[in-house]
Length: 58
Image: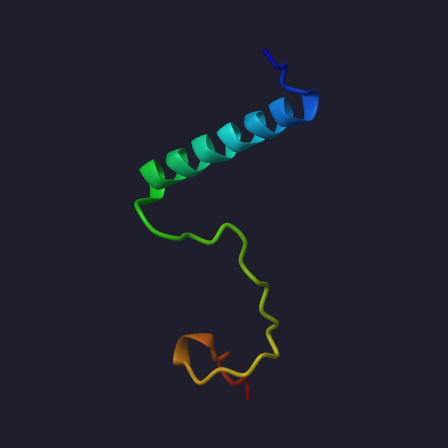
């Protein structure tokens, strides 16, 4: 019988941890894709939405 080498065992552990993390995330957030990192937007980025516009000062 062949023995698994150390690298393949480590890969199996990493795969199992990722699978468990995905399942736990889906239980909390629901099915589908959910971004974990968001891009930081600059205040200078133009947007037409009223909620993003700063009030003019006089």
